[in-house]
Image (cartoon, rainbow, N blue to C red; front, top):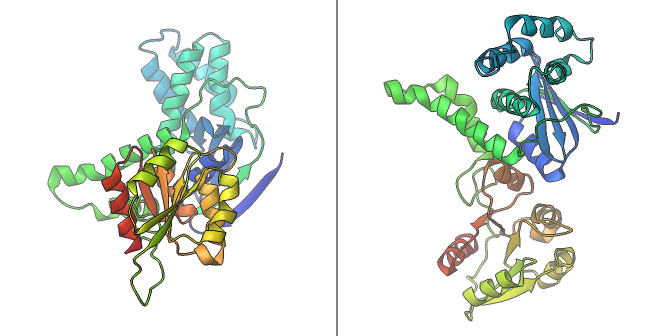
Amino acid sequence: MASSTFSSQTLHPLTLLAQISSRQTTGGLKVTTPSTEWLLLLEQGRLNFVTNSKRPFDRLDAHLRRLSLQVPSLVSAVRVQMRLLFEQAPTGASLLADYQAICWLVQQQHLHPNQAANLIAALSREVLEAFLEVRQGSYEFIEADLLDNTPKYCQLNLRATVEECYALLQQRHRRPTETNGTQPRQNLHHLKSSQGNFAPAAHTVNGGQALTPPPQTQKKDHYTIACIDDSPTVLRAINEFLDDKMFSVLMIDDPVKALMKIIRNKPDLILLDVTMPNLDGYELCSLLRRHPEFRNTPIIMVTSHTGFIDRAKAKLVRASGYLTKPFGQPDLLKIIFKYLN
């Protein structure tokens, strides 16, 4: 089982999850904190299960008790038998014991596979919400299918699930403010840290600060705008929107050839589609930032997704901001002048 381990004093869960989402990872993310171990199981970037070592069978039993109102066979005797069989798992298998217990309930026909899928989804969301508040520890990516030869009942969309859990986390932290009008400083500390690092204001992703071109001794009256998109329709629309003597539009429909064309033409600003074949926008942005001439060139990600995961991925590659699809000429000009000025 191949794995690569990275240790760190500080952890940023949204950044880790953004990396997983962009790589379409299959395997596991194992996180170790002073008091808890966490395990996220994935297949092609989708969540199969999320658990941790903090009383997992108490958590599972609480869900099963609620579920027993609709599933009469989940009586106390069955739940006790399940715990006797799986709670004392051998060392090394303990983080999968609760998942194996759910599989056993299906095998014994106490749960239908659809019920197991709903149960796993509920457990995963509960643990993932807590995981988003982790700030210190170490982690390793395990490049192996930890559920190989084990039934997989659930596949959650990683981006949507993380955003749902993050929204719930924000609600929980805001609730004391709504009831007594005071700021719960200690509770809000981690949330503010997350927002500062991973969910900055619209159109700024580099720690909340927009990247700007280097100072110029004289204001330019003509700008070259590079637009990289595999859609001819989008390219034509942008070219028409920027039909003005102060703009030259460099239209590039092949992301693989884009790097060399940009190096040759040295545009003042780059509009970069996120979803393209062979080389996606985040990968291309990362390549451009490694080139010394484009470390500070404004790079605007053109995308229909601007959630927390997308912002974290954009932060990783140092994109300057977002232009959200669909957009019109006023939206395009507004963001261009924002970064050119």
